[in-house]
Image (cartoon, rainbow, N blue to C red):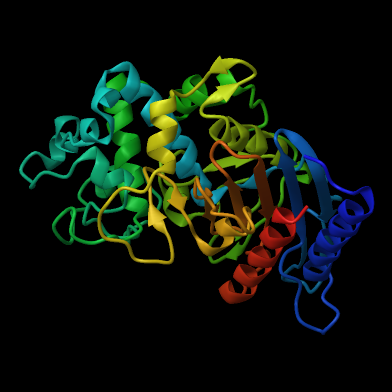
Length: 374
């Protein structure tokens, strides 16, 4: 991609100023986060690399201000719902080996009760329903108290409506997906994700329940009963279930997440190896006809054409449509399938407390516009 050096430098400076402005607002408002890492790549070449802030910056119960370590490119962040994207990829790799994908998405119309005996008396909810948030399941598990009986209590969660009629983003559905994978394979979910995705991509800094020193991990929220959540999953349901779940729980670095994103942009190929089949990537990046509930279309496990996605392909026909996913902790990745641009944004925007969703959404939108213009 040919670009005048001066215009590239100007655009990079604008992106950095935007990031620093959110970290150190000049208008007296609270910072959006204490930690941020951004990576922007074009056809595999990193155009911008920003890492700023501290892994923690909060006031403890005694009134003492506590600061963490400086953020680097190796800082781990809680990916939150981006975990769903990794679990989707691992699931599709497993389904491909079982021949489910030979007829495309039609091969995913298999009832989950094939593997989850608790739901055998229910109307058919298919893998495709779960993967597209159309299973009629609740958004969250309300009884998400930790304890030795947590998984048993979770397995009593029932759909609240018929499958296929409404699009309702559901963490519960992706926890079901994880249970299906474990039942199919006889293997724990973290090992499935590791075997199918993490190790083939060389993602040594990505996984559930990190064990590195806390200075290397961005802190999240101060929660009742937990104190400062640091090095543990922020999502209350994933935490109640032990930290390994289909909806949340993965931690990663910006570099590892960019590698995953680039694999999807390249049709499932990483360093010459076909990690994920072209058909699987197509399912993740092609809208599935059916009801939607937001300013985007729903593919298998990913969102397609969300407003901030479009910023990655300014002008032109925007074909294919950019895709990606976000996480509640302040994380996001986006890419143009078969195109050139990939962007990773990692923050801890819930630290030390949950901020304003609209402020972060506006920050992300502008960041993606600047990244798309590099």
